[in-house]
Length: 279
Image 1 (tube, one colour):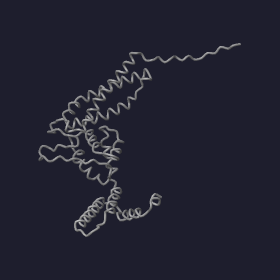
Image 2: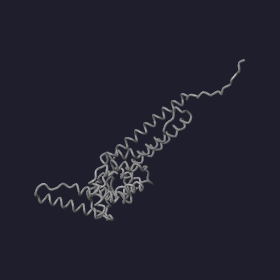
Image 3: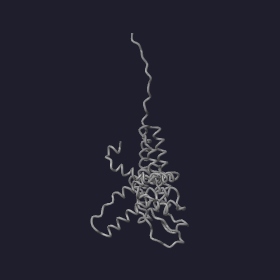
Image 4: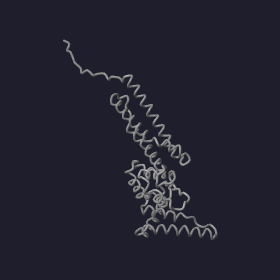
């Protein structure tokens, strides 16, 4: 006797219509065109002030491009909900686009003529108040993460960018990132690029590179790595004395408690082999 068996029928997945396919391809093409225009504008920032006029003309339409791009992403999400084969990581695309958009917006606002800004402001430049004598522009040296370079870097950045009232938070954030490289930039990029996060990033850098013991270790390494004088020379002797005095002055300015104990510990660790030191 043969027994009948029933099985649950699975409805076949309906393939996308030709119209949906054409729509998807058109959206991808539009997305790529908008992205290319914005990328070109972003790349122009590196050429400022040489190509300032071209940048300003392109950047005038950055808000329009922003709306277009996110509108395209919304349409892609709708298609993705209908057909899995059209799945697109729109979140990643949105985040990557925003990185370009906010950098362009910051540079555009910094260079846009405003009542309290008498001439275009190129990236990393600051316009002095009209009442002051015109002085040569001061460039902020890029900071790579070498702790000994941080005091000079942050002093200039504070004076030219951080304490300037007419710059917005996102502009200051953009300037900060543009003046960082290597490990310092890697650290700063752990903070999302947004206006409300500028102070967080700024304080993170200050907290990291102004630690007293790290600075003291740097100054001691500098002091004990000075080369001895090889021949009788007043100039070499004066240079050596100047380096020693400047390093000791920097150490004293740290006002590190128990400095003598710290120096003794530093020198003791220098005399140990790597295995003993790590143990």
